Amino acid sequence: MNRAFSASALIASLVFAVSAVQAGPQSAPANDRMLNGKSVHGEVVAATPDARIVNVDAGKAINVNCGDVVTFQSAGKNFTWKFNSAGHRPLDVRTIAPQGFTDKKLMVYVSRNESEGA
Image 1 (cartoon, rainbow, N blue to C red):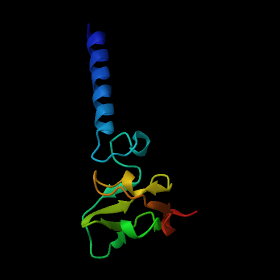
Image 2 (cartoon, helix red, strand yellow):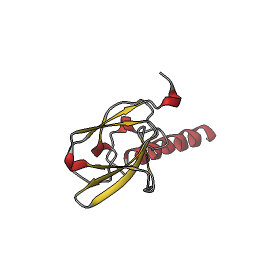
Image 3 (cartoon, rainbow, N blue to C red):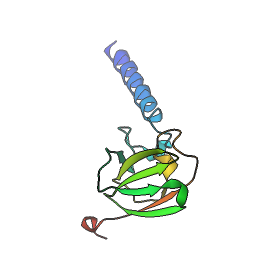
Image 4 (tube, rainbow, N blue to C red):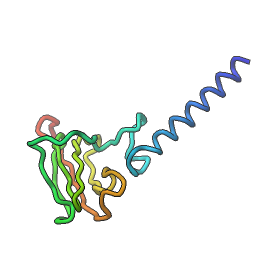
């Protein structure tokens, strides 16, 4: 009986964990999230005076280094993101933006920073 209960509890936990990852605050694909639900690209942070400011409506692509903090602006809205990229792969800003932020595509190319080496 303990095995049946343990198996049921394990299955329920896995279903809950998968649901939590899929229901994250942003509409990122499942492969853009770690098991803890956080983005593989970094995280939302509070705006800082030294953050780079990027107008999403004014470009098609930007380059950033891993560790950079960027405030994205579009149509009077903004959010600030710290790029702590697990894979340094390109992404569309809509992947990390809060829902409804913009419908414009802006590619972000993340490079390694100096401390990460080659």
